[in-house]
Image 1 (spheres, rainbow, N blue to C red):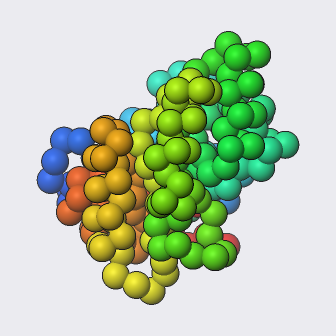
Image 2 (cartoon, helix red, strand yellow; image 1 turned 180 degrees about the vertical axis):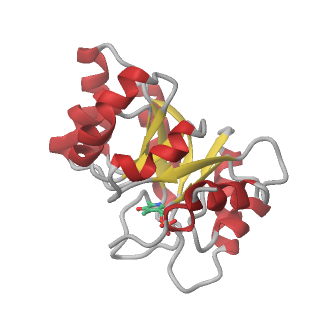
Length: 212
Ligand SMILES: *Cc1c(COP(=O)(O)O)cnc(C)c1O
């Protein structure tokens, strides 16, 4: 068995509920390398650079329209339009400026996408994301004024800390906004995210191996 499929199945077998999806984070890998997982039938893939993702996935998606592409990296304003064209989900909605631009391009391109608001869950200076105390207001603005389809919250907990307490906090925020989806957990901490039944895990190296 191909090692990618083997790794993927091993992770999938740890999922003990029917709500959790794996986003296979294929950033930095060439399509030929990822292809076995596409051929295997997996349909959720994550990327963090718009240009790289466009080059890698545009043709594939024309052939397999069921593939869902997730933008999980920071999205710069000047890439917002291209991102809207390609990605089904954007996990890094993290500023008013970006939200307004995305809404504008949704209108002009006649597209609707799904969004996760990225929350700066550990209140870290160097991390992007909406502050917890500003989340309600930001959520209301995005959904009521801009009409963006916000489906859930996303967070990356502080490194080298127990991720569980941050996942718990994020799930509480998710519930307070009555949001159905959540985007939590990476290769090193997805087992913690599973305890909270996150609906999306974003897993790269544990499936595809180390990135160079
Ligand atoms: C790269 C990345 C991942 C996947 O990281 P791994 O540790 O390789 O699983 C998940 N989320 C975000 C936001 C990323 O940038």
